[in-house]
Structure formats: structure tokens, C-alpha cells
Image (tube, rainbow, N blue to C red):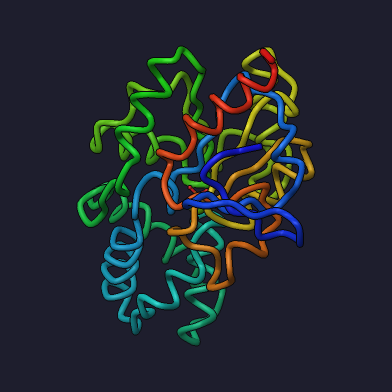
Length: 254
Ligand SMILES: O=C(O)COP(=O)(O)O
Ligand SMILES: [Mg+2]
């Protein structure tokens, strides 16, 4: 029985503490051979970056800028989705996409990381997990170059054995392909890795790939309750991961 956890997915299981288990499968998960981490909303609070970049790009183009609430509910599916959604939301025709995307890209390069903060517990959790020798991979829908720069600027890059972006594979999350390919590149099957994310894009991708999935409660999930996104567990902090790994290892040993 996991300690310090509360089961929220059904009747008959109760616990204490922070981790909320959404699936009874979490009681029998095998130890992962690697962890895949989403970036925006999971490791770094980048909402301020997205807002600053959209503000700069749309202002330059002479358009009204989208609200912070709109941006928070829209991020998670990559830059093109965000730009196209923002155009529609502001009543600007889609044929302005190329102009918007060029301005967005240019401002993102300049502003990347300047309006964002690492979430509490992330640096400590990643350092501890890295010390265990477990391969850690960043798997985000952000373009790979932007992801690497952001992780570097926030002092997190050295923890990761690989960083894959929304432009690294033929399809993005919620398609399972990025998870399947990330596992393959480690010499693993998707069932042997855990996906750690913040949104239904991460949960759907992991479910379809056959990988266990944990979602953080503090990220961006399109304005929907994260408990309903189909995760095995909902975490208040990444610091809850080491005890989960200890629990899985102890179960296997004993
Ligand atoms: O680029 C985005 O929309 C966010 O990407 P991520 O949540 O997969 O890190
Ligand atoms: Mg995310």
C-alpha cells in the first residue's frame, strides 16, 4: 500500500498526504526505467513568456492582444495551435498566420525565459532523480531549440539526457508517437517509462502509448480539472516522485 497518498478514482481506498491516485493501477506499477517530463506547466511556469511574446507580436502587427486567461487555457499544444487560436479569438483571419508566426518566433527567441519561473520543488526533485542514475528526458510540444535554451537559462538542462520538442518527431502530443520514439531512443518500450506532465495532451499521449502517466496539479490543463485528464496520479509537487519510485522498488524487492 502506498503511503501518504489519497485515492480519488473510486471507493474503498483512502490515504493521507498529497499525492492523489486516480487509477488503482498505480498500486502495481513497475519501476520505470526512465522518466519523460513535459516542460511548460510541469517544470517551468512559462505563461508569462507566452503572454509577453504574443503581446509583442500582435502589437507589432497592429492587432489587439489576447488575455492572460485565454493564453493559459490554450497553451500545451504547441506554438502553431496557440497562434492560430489567438488569431481566431481576436477576430483576425487565418491568412495572417505567416506574419504572426514570423513575429512570434522572433520575439520568442528574444524573450524566452524572461517572464517565467521554475515551479517549486522542480530543481530539487530533478537533481535527486538525476543522482539516482535514472535517465530523465524532456518531452515538450515547444520547439526543441526553445526548450533547450529555456532549460539552460533555468539551470535544468544538465539533468536531462535528451530534450525533444514539438518539432522533433512527425507528430506532437497528444499523439503517442513522441512517447514511443523517446522510449525507443533510450532502448526502451513505452511501457517502461513514466510520463510526467500537466495536461490531457500528456495523459492522452501516454495512455495511447501504454506508458503510466502522472500529472501535476499546478499546470495548465485547458481550464479543466486535472483529475479528469486520465492520469494514474495527480501530484502537488515533483518531490512526490522519489517516494513513489521507492514504493515501486520495495514492492518488486519484497
Ligand atoms: O508549447 C506548448 O504549447 C507547451 O508545451 P508543453 O506543455 O508540451 O511543454
Ligand atoms: Mg505542459
